[in-house]
Image 1 (cartoon, helix red, strand yellow):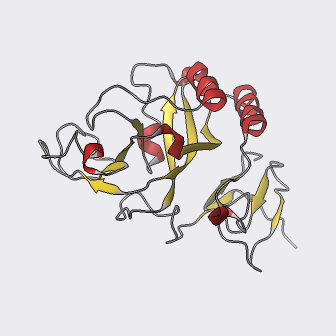
Image 2 (cartoon, helix red, strand yellow):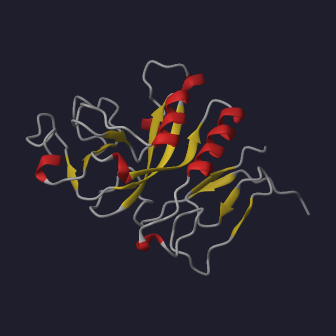
Image 3 (cartoon, rainbow, N blue to C red):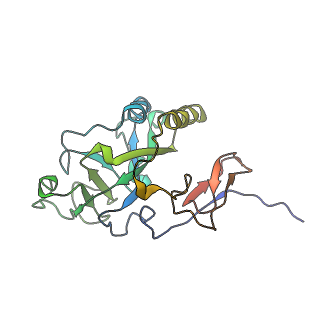
Length: 215
């Protein structure tokens, strides 16, 4: 029998968090999102939580994206050796779509009762020349760091993962009970949590993505 090389997988689930970046965002859902930052800022965010930006294209809030490629661009003027992409779980609350320049609620959506502003991909806004999906979450308490999606080297990756584990909060929302701690989906008979025999990472068969760096 010939040997089999394993490199990982990527899947898309049409369930709450696991929508692709170009799919319509829905209010009242949790989504997996990403935030690009520096190494030092990543340490601060993991330890103390996000802080609201005073202003921006969508006004005050925390800027994140369901598209990891968008987050990988930040910080814009930093070197790749100082870039971290945090993987997040975001309770979006009530969502307002902002899909054109000079939208009447571009910076006032929160005062109108919305928790998150969403800029769809390729909507033509001049302020988003990349055309990649973007979100602004007004309340930082709605965002939890769950993992590291990108790090410049294994030393920093290991350090930040350990920091996340140390600062992990126990779930307080009763709606989150009965979910898999790895893939975050509802626990069912199809869930198999085990250690990847390639890289040693804890994985679930229903994870949206796993890239094995062992080979």
